[in-house]
Structures are given as C-alpha cells and as structure tokens.
Image (cartoon, rainbow, N blue to C red; front, side):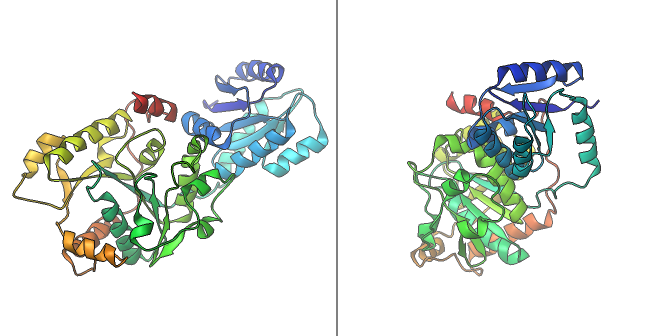
Length: 390
C-alpha cells in the first residue's frame, strides 16, 4: 500500500497500544500517537507538522473527543477524521459521525478498512483546492514602508482584478493600517484564531471593508493567547478558500507565530530602503528566511523609496545577497498627505502608477504555480520555533 501518515489522539493507552500493533501489522508504519486531546492551536501545529492523511480520535472522554472531531472536520477538510473506542457504543458512534467523523474503528479493529476508506476517498472528487493566492510583505526594519506597499498593492489588486482581496496585518505592536485608513474594526486576527472550526462563512462578519478591500487587523499583544497561534495555518487555508488574493503585512521580527505565514505564502517580498542599516538588516532577514527552508525562488527584494545616487543594483546585491526585483519611487510627500486624510495615494502619483504596475505584473504571472520544495522539504513548525528561539 501507499505509505500514509496517521495521527492517533487518545488518552486510553490500552487502546492506542492495541491500535499500534494492529496498524503496524497491516503496514501502517508512519504512526504518531498523541496521549492527550490537544487545544485547537496545538492541533493546528500537529496537522501542519505531521501532514497526516487520517486523524484517529479516541472516544474515551466523549465531550473533548467530539469537539476535537468537529474541529478537524471543519478546519482541515483535506484530512480524513475517524473515531475509535475500546467498546462499541451505538449512541456515541452516532454522535461521532454527526460531529464529522467519516469512519468508526472499534473492536475487532479491522484496520485494513482504513486503506479502503482512503482509496474510496481518492476516487471521489474532494473539496476544491484553495483558490486564493497569498503574497506577504516583510520589512527589513521598521520604517521601510512595507505596510504602505502592502496596503497600496492590495487596493491595486482589488481594482485591477475586481476580485475579493483580503489584507491581513500581523504586527501586534506597531500595526497601524486601521488607524491610517480611519477604520475602527470590531474584530481582529485573535478572533479568527480563537474560533473553533471553519471560518469560511464568517469572514464577512470579521473584516473591516474599505473601498474594495477587506482588512483584518492584529490584536493588542495581551489579547492573543499563545496557544491559538497554532491555528494560523487553518486561518490561512480558510482565507484562501474564501478570497482570491490575500496580502499579508508582517512585522520586521521573524518569530514563531509568523513562520506559518511565510511558509504558506506564494511569494514573499522583503522591503528595504537604500540606506546601509536597512540593507544590513535585509541580509539578516534573508538569512533567517533561508533557515526556515523557504525556496529562494519565493523571496524577492523590493527597494522602496529608491535613491539611485546612493547604491547601484550590483552594490545592493553584494550587501543583501540578492538584487532588487522591483524598485519603488520615493513619493513620501504624497504618502504622508494621503495618510493624513485617511486614504491611499492617487493612481496618478508616482507611487500610484508604480503600484498599478506591481499589481498587473502579479496578475500577469498567472495562477500560483506549485511551489518548489527544497531537499528535505519544508521545516515543520516545531523546528521553526526552535530556530526562532536561538
């Protein structure tokens, strides 16, 4: 049989021992056992890290188990969720199926049935793949203008394509797009991460609309629970199912909560200015991104507030390790005036024309191709957290 990954979640050690023996005898060698019911955030990390084909949930503690089955079923539609128990209790089995379990595995544990379930599932058209394309903007340092670029690009994409465009702001300490656009959002990214299950039908209630784009700002630092960060991949997957374009505005610090955003991006634009400190920090950001395992092809350098008199492109390539893929004009007066009035710069300004071209180039590149995978694959979230802590 084709090798498949299976995650078993159950505090019943006797059950998991029996399942391990049966599964290994049937050829399921890629098994992971979690001895406690994870929180939604920890579940997200497990799914993102392990990429299981099946999550098998033990029903020894029914309330927690049924909630977990519902979370897997709604938040991770590509994963098959099944229930298991040491005894066959009809009412509990029915509750598990109603919660989203596709199958039930009980005594005498005919695990070979799981192979047939996966085979049948592959023959049936599954849920549509995420349609949305996500681009992320990472500043080399604070003040490089990444948020300005992200906001203007989101607006330009929405206008050029007429498609649903979401602007996600991730900087919990210095996020200011809502302020700049004179918005008073009721909800933040924390609300999206705290919600169990699928977000697909709730985006319209969470976001703050602004002239063709929809903004979801960051929470205050004390509003976000660390255990919810593991749901970031599920939030992004839901966003891609709901929106055609997602623009992520990241903070300068690459830390554990944001690596999934980078890993799920179709392109990452590192924004810096033509001053020696920003270029030095841009090289550090590049090194950090490489340590996370992102392919070089996904990362591009954007030179903002271009100053041709300071550094030539070949100098920037030497300092940063990559040449600028795009340069944006220094239109500081127009930008500052626009923010004072709670708007974006006009399309006829130097920056406005540059952003229209930026959007057209992105749209013209077509649908996001399958991303290249480096040798060894993407680093799991747990490894990313280890790296970011060092």
